[in-house]
Structure formats: structure tokens, C-alpha cells
Amino acid sequence: KFLTAAAAARHVAKEIDKLIRARNAAGKHTVLGLATGSTPVSLYRELIRLHREEGLDFSRVVTFNLDEYYPMPKESQHSYFRWMHETLFSHINVKWENIHIPDGALKPDEVDAACEEYDEKIRSFGGIDIQVLGIGRTGHIAFNEPGSPQNSRTRLVTLDSITRRDAADGFSGEKNVPHHALTMGVASILEARRIFLMAFGEHKASIVYKAVEQAPTEAISASFLQEHRDATFVLDEAAAAELT
Ligand code: F6R
Image 1 (cartoon, rainbow, N blue to C red):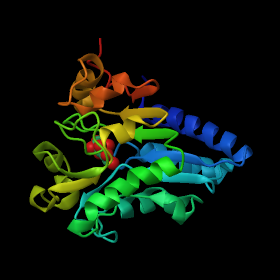
Image 2 (image 1 turned 45 degrees about the horizontal axis):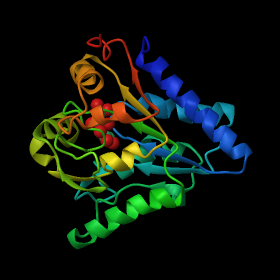
Image 3 (image 1 turned 135 degrees about the horizontal axis):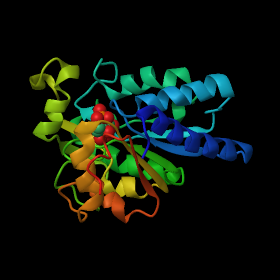
Image 4 (image 1 turned 135 degrees about the vertical axis):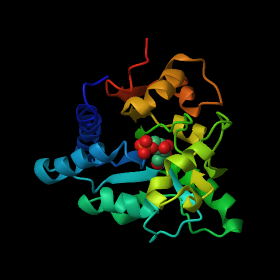
């Protein structure tokens, strides 16, 4: 728990920085799992600063994003593809061929095979070293809404109405928010070697409490992180307020 979201973001950035530098020194790649949304913005700002001011080299970094709306063209102002490029990728020296984001422009009959390939691609790079997560008010990690099984893989899902309501501002109205998304599954996420779930603000306090202190359940996919060997909840004071 940290006093502020900025301090929490610096902590996670430092861990990512240490791993990338160690891997670079050994001539090896680093595989990062990345999230979108308001929560990781301060982390991405700090990573950009580390790149610009402290020489953090992303040329051997491979990234996998958690999710994308469906359907969603890459160039849309609402796509996570565009958001990631504007918020992080275009400010660091990650190689574009090393960036992976579920493709919201797939034809319906291509989706299943592409989702399977996404999980295979992660495995082909040796799995995710550090996974960054946020948490939705439904308790989702990525877009694993209530009812997502612990063994779920990357797939097409239907978004919860709370999630669509929370996204409404960005889409100028809930009716414009897509009903579906492509998301990494709970099992795909839990295979990461290290996980940081970040949550900031009082609106996250009650779901953080349930995810951390109640028994793991499909009703709150973040609760499955309790069963992971190296998962850390990185919280500010407000998000940690209901923890005992
Ligand atoms: C985004 C994602 C979501 C968000 C969650 C919290 O890639 O997978 O699970 O992390 O909805 O969103 P914010 O950070 O906007 O509160």
C-alpha cells in the first residue's frame, strides 16, 4: 500500500526497469503483459521518463495487451491499439513487431483461431514475465467478467452492463460502447510469473476488499490472484481503505 498512486506507479515501474535491465545485460528479451484504462497511465508515464532520462532500453521488450473491444478498427479513437500507441509505445523504443494486442478488426469466423494463436504466441516467447493489471468494478481482470472460469483462455466475451456504463464517458454515451471484447483469459493471466494489480481511488475500495479477503470465486475474477505465487495488489490509501 502506498500513500499516493504516483508512488505506487513508481514502485511497479522500478520493478519493470530492474527486470528489463537485467535481461538486456544478458542479451535476452523481457515479456510484459499490459493493461489499458486510467489506472496504468502514471506507470506508463514513469516508464517513458525512465526511457528518456535514464536510458531504459525497450528494444528487447515484447508486449502483450490484455484486451480490445470487439468489433473495433485499430485506427478508431476508441481502440486500445490506438490508446497504447499514444500513451506508451510511440514514446519508447519498443519494436513494433514485438507489440501484440488482440485484433478487434477480425472477421467473426477468424476470432476463435486468432484467440488460440494469441495464447500460443505468449507461450512461444516463454510466457509473461511481469503482468500489469487493473480491476473493474465488477471485479474483472482484463475483461473477465463475473462467471469467467479459472481455466478460461483468450476469447470473445460479452461485457457486463456495469463495465459498459463505466466506459460510457469515453464513448460519449453508453449506447456507443461495444457489447463485446476480446480478452486474455483468467488462466492466460495466471500463467504470468509475476503480477501487479494496481487499483487507485475510493471507488475501487469495495471490490479490492472482496478480491483480496473473500474466498476465490468466478463471480470476481481478480479473486483468483490469491492463488498465484507472486501476485501483488498495489494500492493507494483510498483503494485499500476497506482492507482489514
Ligand atoms: C484494461 C482492462 C480492464 C481495466 C479495468 C479498470 O485493459 O483490462 O480490466 O484494467 O476495467 O479500468 P480503469 O483503470 O480505467 O479503472
